[in-house]
Amino acid sequence: MSPFSRAASKLRAHLNYLKEENVTEVEVSPHNLAALQQRLRAPRASTPSPTPTAAAPIANAPVAGNVAEELAAIAAEIAACQKCRLCESRTNTVPGQGNLQPEIMFIGEGPGAEEDKQGIPFVGRAGQLLTQIIEAMGFTREQVFIGNVVKCRPPDNRVPMPDEMAACLPYLERQIALLKPKVIVALGATAVKGLFNDPKVSITKIRGQWMSYQGIDTMPTLHPAYLLRNPPAKREVWEDMKTVLTRLGRPIPAPKKRS
Ligand code: URA
Image (cartoon, rainbow, N blue to C red; front, side, top):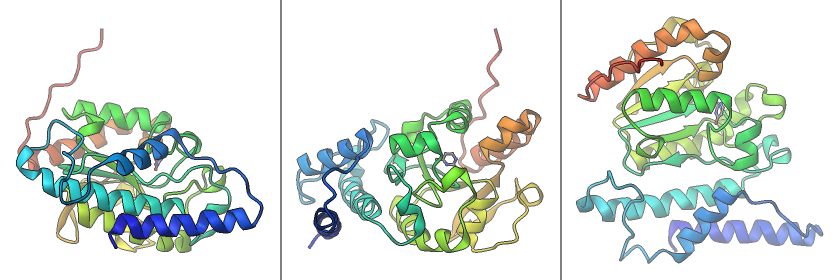
């Protein structure tokens, strides 16, 4: 049984359980629905579909096909997940989004209100700032992968609890192992705490200094939500992103002139 079939069968079992509980409707975000429909329409793994971005080389298409299938399987498992209390209040799960062979994987804390509504990571105010940072680095959102430590919104945007992070972490670990980014950018203390299982992280002390997650260069930096409250700290994040670009052998774009 393929990973997708296994996850689909888990999802089916969960939906049957809901039906027995007299639940007649479930909400699915347009994003998650499109991802499922795309997977159901896609050819089997033996004739993989090309990676969704033009940036990925054709020679790697079979790899990307398998990655797409495995990622869709993880997303389906997340959609049916009840491993912690966050499943009780979520509208949509937010498994992550982006390139299947990313140079950079950005990892945040967890979905907020807008992400919970849409099923897409970083689409609220902090997300718009993250998009600006990505574009200032010379990438588009489609060229990187964006994920979170927890895949369901903590009520009132509170920080995820240690047991919630521990329950959700295996999904992120599997996503990282599949995507094999060249660099991980950990956004804020919670992302670092989750990835490195270290509850005592001070992000202002460790930001800008390389860490290694499973052999992958990992740059801890400040969370975009923090930058919304402290705009002068954008300078520090830009320093960190320049360090990332240098590690990737990429040019450092000149800052855009304000008109
Ligand atoms: N903040 C996060 O950490 N993740 C999101 O997806 C949105 C806001």
